[in-house]
Amino acid sequence: MKKRIIKGCAWALALLTAVSVLALKQDAAYGATGVDANKERSLSFSLARNVGGEGIPEEDLKQDITIRYYKVAEMNVPTGTYSGKLQGNWAALKTVKYKVVERADKKGFDVKVDGVDKDYGACKEEEQTADLEDVILDTSEEGRTNATFAWDALAKKAAAISENEQEFGHVVLKNTADEAFAAEVSLEEVPPAMYLIMADDVKASNYMYSFKPYLISVPTNGYADGTADSDDWIYDVKVGLKPEQEERYGRLRITKNLSDFNASLGDRASFIFEVRAEKDGDLVYSDVVQLDFTGAGQNTVTIGPEEADGVDVVGKIPAGSTVTVTEVYSGASYEAATDTVRLDHPMQAYDEENGVAENVSFTNTYNGGINGGSGVVNHFEYTESENGTGGNWQYVPSQSAEGGNTQ
Image (cartoon, rainbow, N blue to C red; front, side):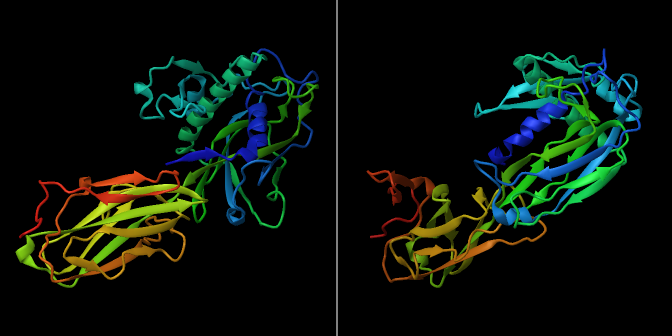
């Protein structure tokens, strides 16, 4: 699936970087005065909607977000460290092996974790080790980047561990589309500890939103990574949720009705359809599919995003796109009642819950000619127009095609 991080939530990434390296260095307390066990502590969550750049579509903002949190380790008070506090399954966070892998598009890096990612062994990058109790912070820019990777690996491992752990609690961030920012939800009287934060996926009409798991210390401190001028403890911790957006895709079923069939022209008649989808002014899908007939009747072909029951051709047509299907070849002796059909609404996403597939249909009749109508998809070539604004598929005759002229 295509993923992109919402640029409008870049502030959340900065905040995440800030909080993710705070509870790392264990040889001294952060705050000069130590943690005050009697001071009230809170943890609040919010979601940025559109902060300069790409944002989340307004209609998607009406989705509520369930946020689950797990207590990974109690804090050593007043030092503010976590040495010796990892218990039970969480003790696995003392030794987390990971690799930093550059993405194929060269636009970022992914952290692969041993025992979590199935392709970990195939990654050729250098193996590194993170320990929640003893990740030493280098305050240089490179050091902060490396610490962020280490913390991402720890959070990813913690998320896998959480599958067998009971959540400490959860809250629901209720969103409305009539404010500049999503509403904030807060937890009061939060025990001093390290917490794993997990937000449930949000399913919108055209996109799926997911949130990276991460670990956060309550209280926290903004001095260690150079984001604050004071080493005072921060007891009211604010977290900005950083969503990743994935395209959702639909299923398209093309139905062909052939009212007549002339077997004297060959034992098979083939019909070729071009499928095009546009979204936000861009061509996002283009392909051709074929339907074969050995007699009059009805036949269908279904395009879906992945191999599954009921899918004949794998193709990812984005939800929300405008889909046009054109019959580009129907054989010389068959006539199409309509050669182009456009969906009268945006493509709907398909999943197992709704089971909705979009449908378009065509009807052909035998016109009395004597030219056969078989062929293969490979006999069609796409020619782009000279000005680069479009093009068309053209049938390229082949001696190997079945049927053909019977004269």
